[in-house]
Length: 425
Image (cartoon, rainbow, N blue to C red):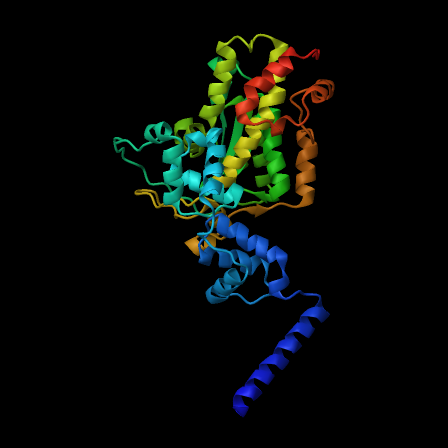
């Protein structure tokens, strides 16, 4: 009994010493760290495995000791679970019905299960989400059922690591006939190793090389990492972007000709092309239906400059919001192993951040502030972009402030409201 009492006393003394050291060094004990709790909750909602969460926590909270068992204890302490069995069925039903009112109607039950986890904090079994979707939208579930497809032979594709090759391309499916019916275009960048979407920009067109170059320069300024190669389509819109890449690559000295840092080829072999299909099937089709409804009802006239400005003001922020949400979910979903594809399976965010866990290495080239300032000055690109004049934006903001908060189901009514207003553009 005395030995047990002594051991308990010693443990208490050691605990007091540890607490005193933590307070003296300004480091809070882990169980009082609210940031840790929120980060753990976020990683679980992103459906990361415990080993993948452990990589992130070791990086973010290096001041604490970490192991799989320690992570499990801390998840239990903070009452964070992958599946929350105490969620009311009504909460799941309301969340699913809310998503079905917008582009969520295009999602299957696997993707829909990830959306309530990420956006609503509802962590429930995938089977339950499937049952709720079948009850709320049986016709939609039937339309999205998997059908037999002809198997096509695939060519093996390899990438040495994150930022080895980035695939960039424009997506004009929302622009309509001859890319001029609707002023809504999307430009994106995908890392071919991790399949992570690095940026997705919505604008009124994809034909201006300065706009596309500005998108790429903004990404370089934010990431401060230069990829080794860019995979582009051979078009006039990529000229400025290609010049920026070649200019920065020539300082590295590893290429005899810096233009070798640009890989040109047809769109059919660009890796982001396959991703556009997912974006179109799971998000864009809902927006396209709204645009066609406005066009066919003669509410929107593509030859009227005022109508085009109203559409840009209303739709571009909404489509950008939906694209950002889609990218957020895509980058946190799990890619399964594909036959004939020599790339690792996993979650894009984790693949991109921890390539060494998959037998690869980070291939990006660090950029200095001096490099970025020099290329910005030589390229002459503006620091901020506007698809409407300041005067037009000010007038429209008086009628409909914060257009990015308009729900997709209210877009038609919002456009009619703007068109019937007395604003002159």
